Amino acid sequence: MMENSLSSRMQMAIRRITGRGKLTEADIDEMMREVRLSLLEADVNFRVVKTFTANIKEQAIGEKILKGLNPGQQVVKIVHDELKRVMGDENAPLTFENNGLTTFMTIGLQGSGKTTSIGKLGVYLRKNLKKKVMFIAADVYRPAAIDQLITIGKQIGIEVYDEGLKDAREIVKNGLKYAKEKNYDVAIIDTAGRLHIDETMMQELVDVKKIANPSEILLTVDAMTGQDAAQIAKSFHDQLNATGAILTKLDGDTRGGAALSIREVSGIPIKFASSGEGMDTFEPFHPERMASRILGMGDVLTLIDKATEAIDEDEAKNMMEKMMSDNFNYYDLLKQFKMIKRMGSISKLMGFIPGMGNIKKAASQIDDKQFDKMAVIINSMTDKEKKNPTLIDKSSGRRQRIAKGAGVNVSDVNNLRQALETQKKMVKTMSNMSEKDLEDLQKDPSKLMNKMPQRSNTGKGKGKGNFRR
Image 1 (cartoon, rainbow, N blue to C red):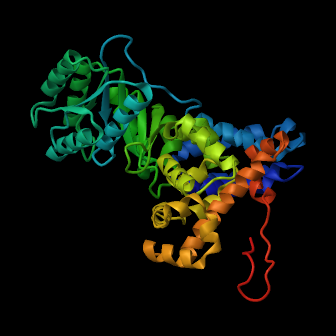
Image 2: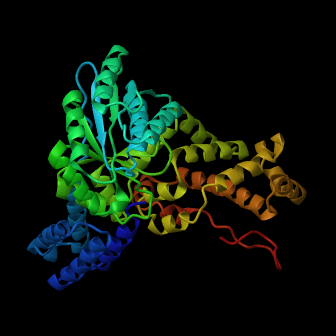
Image 3: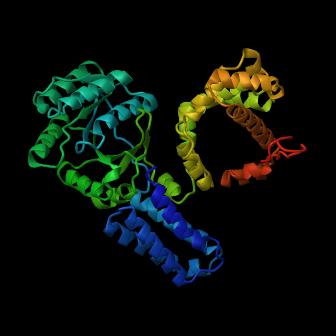
């Protein structure tokens, strides 16, 4: 994720002061040096870094902080609030017309992920806001861009209006007329992306803006360009008055400079963040949530949003009841794998959970295809074995047969057995917890592992008994 390298450096700088009962101005100066370095290394604009660190220091060396209770935690809050301010304080929602067709115009340099973002935005509008969406292919300088948009449209079931390589102004005029006739709610215009900003490109975009009179002019910005993204955004904004930015490629090895520079340098609010290849890897940008992620506080609200989108309420309720009944079996585990896969990658999900920083690093090493591997193992079981896990637990012959059928080692089958047992123990442990325990768990989910019953090695000799945990 975008915030990884910046996140680790920022957390390291702040960790040095959080546990202290008393802070001096020298302590604050030391922390600010580390924060400044972490921001510059993340390719945040120098002017933004200067303002950011000055604002934090001014608040942190106040009498109330240095002499107050738990000053370290108060400084963390100051840093969090400043991160949030730099990225725009609150989520900036999309603007729609009260009646008739709403038009969105997308702009951006070639290679910024503009055409793919249009597809993702279309899926978001249809799924989350129940809008009837159409695309207009007006990037007439690259035939491949029109073909790409048509391919994406077919893939997601959204109509694409195109007239080939004609004048973009005419295409937009005709496309909007067609959208109104067909009673579409939203028309998204894909405009020309160039390798650099030039006068001809800008004039065409200005002309298209006059014709379309869009409710939103959305600039797609490649997060991997760092603070350069902010300068590109400013150039577009000065001439077109963009209403929002879509930050793309957040899953790459980016340093975070774009997210912390765009709003402050260009004045354009970041409205959406896009990561991954899938059409569902697109979410509204919440400055407060991103600030929490950067500081390792997790992002439970986004995790809840993802779960709500991916998992039906009745489905989740039935799954929980089955787990509580102690009849949880391999059929249920397979259903659970499918639910989790719908929410996204394991390493990404870990990043949303508070207190999971260290576990997230380990999870990033997990290949998400492990779920597919476990599904193959489960599908190699008989119907009786799936329904009654104890049959496999009691028979080494069954385990060997299942491993052979799935093309895996017996140890992989044993790992799956352990996953099932861990799930049962986790639910049983949570069902016996008090309200206070559950509140503590919300603050630090890793405490759950400490409360779970441990397995002991009661056997004698090598390889006997159960596994140690």
